[in-house]
Image (cartoon, rainbow, N blue to C red; front, side):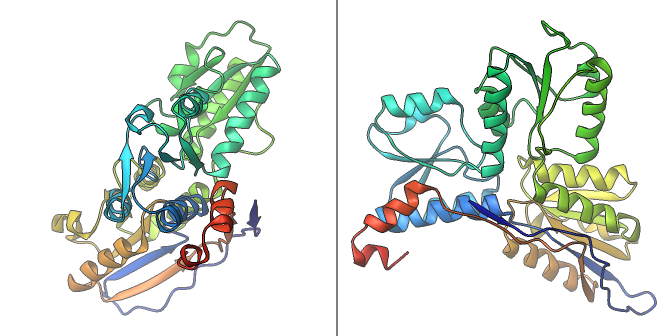
Length: 341
C-alpha cells in the first residue's frame, strides 16, 4: 500500500548571508503529505474518469484553496451524506468516516470511493481491535475535528475523547486496569506526549498502539520548525484555520518563544509582523499547496527579504497507492477515457 523510506535528520545547508541582510528560511519538508496527495489525486482522477459531478463528503483536505480548485472542476462538497443523491458517486475525505456513515451510504446505494488516509485507517483498525478485546478506549484529540468524529464512531460505547492533561484527571472508566489509548494523527508531539504521560500515571496498566499514531508528516514538519525557531524572528505557517496540523506548527513556534502566525496566503500577512524582523522561517501544513508558499516567498522578497535559504531538516519520501475503487475504475474505463487520466 505504501513505500516508506527511512527519514533521518540532516544538517541544514544554509548559504552565507551578508551582515544585516534579511533572510527567508524555507523549511523542508513542508506542504503536502502522501495522504493529501493521494486524496487530491483520487478526486481529480474520479472527475476525469467518471465526469462531473462527483460528491465529496466534507472537505477532501483542510485547505480552502484546494477545495475551491476541485469545486471548479466539478466536485460538489457536502457536509452530510444525506445531501448526496441516491445512487450517486461519493468520495470520503482523507480524514475518514464512521461506520454509521458507511452504513448510510449503503442504504442510499451510493458508489463510494474511499480517500481516507491509510494512517487514519490504521487508527480505526486499532480502535476496533482494542474494543473487541474489552478495553475502555481513550482517544486523544480535538472533539470537533473530522478525524476524531470518524475514529470515535468505530467504538462509541467504550471511547472517551480527551484534549488536555486536565481532562485526564477527571477521566473515569469501568476498569482502570483495562484501558487503551489512541491519538489523532495531526496532534502536537509535545502535547500528546504530556497527555499520554498523564494517562500512564492515572492508569499504570494502560496500553497503546505498537507505533505512534501521529503521522510522519505532522512529526517531520514540527521537527523542522523546532530546528529553526531559535534562528528565526518570525515563523509563518501556510495553512487554513481548520487544519489541525497547521495550527500545531504555530503552537510549536510560539512554545519556543518565537512569534508565529498561520496564514492562508500572502495576502494574510500583516506588514507589522515584519518590522524589526531579520529572519523569517516559512513552512506549510500538510494540506497546503506549494503555489501558496511561492506567493508568500514572492511577497517577502518584495518587502526586502532578498535571501531565500532552503533548510532541509530531513528527507521525506512516502507514497500511498490508490484505493481499489479508483484502480478498478481506471482499468474498466473505455480507452479514450482512461487515456486522459
